[in-house]
Image 1: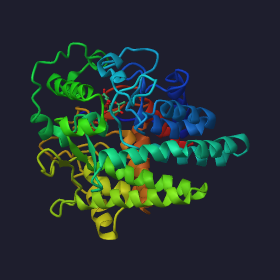
Image 2: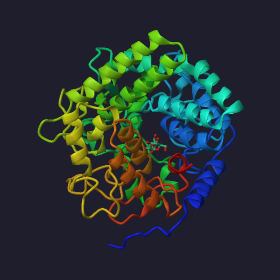
Image 3: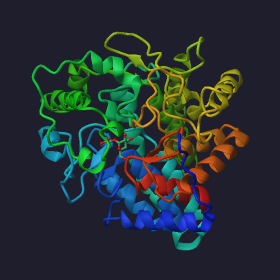
Image 4: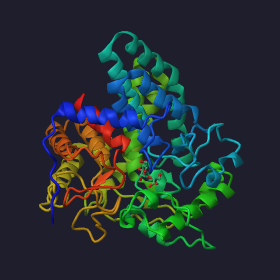
Length: 444
Ligand code: 9WN
């Protein structure tokens, strides 16, 4: 196959282009996830975007997180979308109709959440503020103090509403909550869902902007996505009622690993800013989620697994989520085995890969589809998350290699949402904010 080479671009040039993308997608108090495909604020995108923005302007980075916090639900949930002034998108506020929920905020939002990477972004803002010094330092420190209780409420909500029995695995009620919408991780669970009546999908917004429908989820998948929204809306987004009723209840191992890492980071911030009790509580949560993740690891494959809470079955489908222990940290033998697998010939070291970066599904897997979204492509933002976590767990050599390969990938200056892993072709949306943000986070 034709491979897509990146021209040689200097780090300064790459950073300048990335900064331009973030500025261009800035619509005032939010940075849209991408200019046309995603014209609103997405929760975990906003966190990654903040780590990049912090390198350009600490005050602007703080604005991004404040916009998300202003849309926090009374329960503590941070919603997966905060809608901007332009309503163009499907499903938009008229489909979610969150006003039926007594706990919804005044802002227009969706009624589900996304992985809790936010505390990691807060730590990056603090770090950037301290590096810059002066007013930026003051602003960043004040922001940590002012917003601490909001992040705490978010983490407490996750623990209480999404892991009520304290098993250490967070449950999700929609594939969108995982951030990996159509990953084969969810195929079996979705296959069991039969909407009682046909659901029209003729308003799909994404297919107007991504020309090849094979790069996006199918209409059948969208029907199920919309059916789940209807179930949640009928339960008025009440956490207990949704948990009882919803057809999709999956313990998400990757989200749990992120929660563990984020609780640990927020605990560090709490300890530093005089919140010792809360820091201890957060460290306990970090440990609880880490235990949940490690308890899911298959002895046969060495990969972490999701669990279907409707059937009790563990999901053995291979995906990048299997490397959840690399995100939350693990005992030495588990860490060693995970690093070996991650860098080995079925994953980053697969000989057919254009670049040695983690594919969302490994090329030898029967589910692998190289152009389709979360079914094979490489996502720069995921590479960054693994880079960050690997360094945190002392795996510097592996992390350095990822960074070098990823910067080479980003040298095409398209800032693509995802890349075809065998050819290196840019796919999905271009000018994707979180892709630009991670370039800045790496370079500046
Ligand atoms: C649905 C914004 C979001 C990301 C998700 C990614 C994709 C939305 C979509 O885009 O999801 O939330 O319409 O496909 O899967 O991770 O946050 O970039």
